[in-house]
Image (spheres, helix red, strand yellow):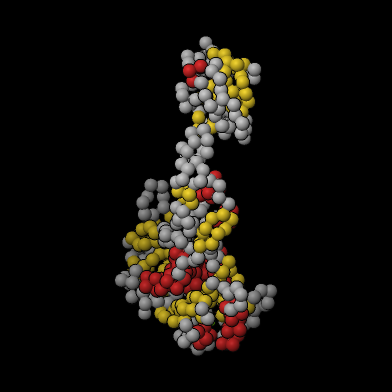
Amino acid sequence: MISVDDYRAQVTELLGRRPAVSRPVPDCAGLVLAEDVAAPVSLPPFDNSAMDGYAVRSADVAGASEDSPVELRVGEDIPAGRVDVPALPAGTAHRIMTGAPMPDGADAVVMVERTDGGVQTVRVFAESAPGTHVRRAGEDVARGTVALTAGTVCGPAQLGLASAVGRDTLAVHTPPRVLVVSTGTELVLPPEPLAHGQIYESNSIMLAAALRSLGCEVTTVRSVADDVDSFRGAIEPWLGGTTPVDLVVTSGGVSAGAYEVVKDTLTGAGVTFTKVAMQPGGPQGHGTWEGVPVVTLPGNPVSVLVSFEAFLRPALLTSLGHTDVERTRVRARLLETLHVPAGKRQFRRGFHSRTDGEVTGVVGPRGGPGSHLLAAFTQANCLIVLGEDVTEAPEGSEVDVLLL
Ligand code: AMP
Ligand code: MG
């Protein structure tokens, strides 16, 4: 048996690092920058007004107040976007709007609320120290500096900044195209009625949703019978051609029984099958098939999701350039005694809650350890992680919890 951590490292190595690709900025949300983004312009690019009001020379409005306003002739209107801004002669004001360039000679803005709002002449009711309501060129970003560093996750603010410095494309690590394959002669798709012995297929739906949540482009083959020719025939078209998929993820057919179609097809063909010291999700396989990385998961639905959490999610996030690939881990007090098989890391579905001000909170299991108990998973908001070194976690003890 191999440990969870070692197996995770192997899957991470298999997936490697996704190439850097240039993409339009709007399509980069959630992706990781593969380049430093330099600022060829300063932000703001020019000194501009932070208020609607009047650009003035501060010396001209010194001493102005409600009781003794200063009256100035209004020279020009400067709306945002005006590019031919005349200088401000002494003893006058220009009416200026937020974001408009400051005229030469002016060193302050009086907000319109502190004036009578005049158009020919303006009465100013407050003085304005030099620099008041002026946004200086470069005070956000200086031209020539790095605005965003490689490795940054592109959220709304980051995409906004990239656009503000004039970028319309960015180099990012793009998510892989993934083929998800569900194996099992018993699998049926709706609206087909179930015969006794058949079940509705659900793994591919879960995997596709989980993969898409990381940005992957997913194709599914939802029901492949447990024979080698069917399996091979379903997948091979996706491995060659002009646009092979980047990754194949299968479920089912990797355990110790007979009719283990994934194992039977891929053993000796570049994929290694192992038992990982975990519950659920012990039987696992990974490798390459005709040059394409393949990760083979067991068939039970809960095993599929736990395997995704334990291996695929961190490996994919790493491949996409993320450095923070961990779920938030907290300690919580167990509400119920749990039993763990010796030497295995057990991932139990749980519900974690915390009252205000509490550091750890409490956690109770949702459903038993059985890897077919999918309904219980829908009630869970975390995985309770019980280590290889324990066989019992008593009620009231503190355990590790991964928040989903
Ligand atoms: P296997 O790993 O192929 O032995 O499958 C283990 C269990 O998971 C069996 O009870 C299967 O019927 C079930 N199973 C396998 N694949 C799926 C699937 N795609 N959707 C729902 N259940 C599945
Ligand atoms: Mg099967």
